[in-house]
Image 1 (cartoon, rainbow, N blue to C red):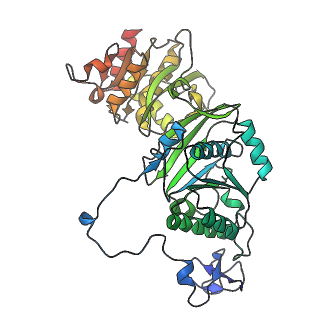
Image 2 (cartoon, rainbow, N blue to C red):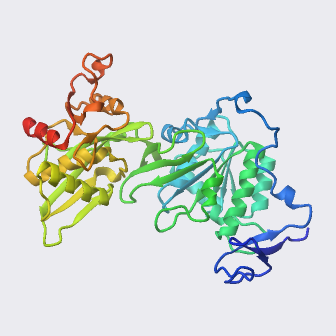
Image 3 (tube, rainbow, N blue to C red):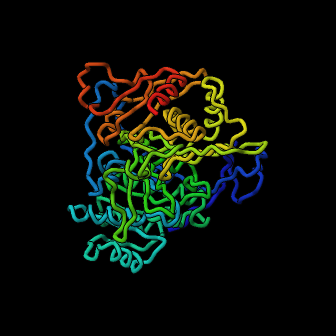
Length: 461
């Protein structure tokens, strides 16, 4: 079979040239040429066939919508992130730092699927079969019947998937796979895009769920072309500090479930284990309340999590520092200005450090009120009451705005035994409402402005 000819296409003008050049000969754009394959006449249609079968034009209201069947992996936290389990013909991309546990989690998931009766295939391009077997024994999967293929050539991988027809196939990793139709090295933009497109088409046409493991850059983003994330159905990110035993799997994109859902795992000698009560990770165990600590309830997807916000205010020099870990630094500067202007709490000559315990990242503005109360507590050296929590967005005018799904946040706090909550007035449950029993034992103080919140805290001290 003759090898297809390689060409380089310009992303600016669409022109092509048989060899790579730094400057496009047609439009003069620099670094705009991308490697591709020149298709003989009549073959491009087959090679780039649609991922979905061609159908007739239909009215949206006439199309019958059906729930997508899911297959649980046997790992509850992973199923939560996926939206209930894997979907037939779906393509999942998972990325994370080296050594964080991607291969470990996927090997455990494949073993669980295989034990439930699903056929599985683990394609490894970074390890030999013996290394995978050694890891499976460390994980306690001695008698696992998961099929393993050590291969990086795309055609051989596609041929194996076509002959074996597994329900789930893992490609570890997409950066190691290469196609003979391209001359560039594995991991290049052209190779990653080409191999991912063929594997995606194989998943859609054959019904095999394919999981792609992706490398990440120094900044933590998935390496390779961004089209890779657009092409797949689900994008998962593995997060966590290598010095900690806890890991977070976060859904950034999911066509079959909620985004920003997280799964919490603990790394043990037998692999990754799901954490049933993740709030316990993000709450420090103080024997007595300490200044500068305030608990808030944040939402990660559909799950409310209790996180401890810690603040340290100390005398600074002529240029005081503002440092935050797990929170937006620019927002911290804004909150300090609001605290000074509307509540009379000045930190101009103080260093302010804020940290979200447990390595969690909080991006929602509902953390504003807890951050401001923790800063005030540290500045005055007075601890907040035991069993205290707060949440709510604070505006530039000093108003406390409601947080989404406030009732669920309060319900989670009451379930974990918290006794005092300062929340936006719009999030407070109505007196005598039907759900009043769900908040028994939790005294709720609704506030409308930051000054009111500080007055409530002074009254509780």
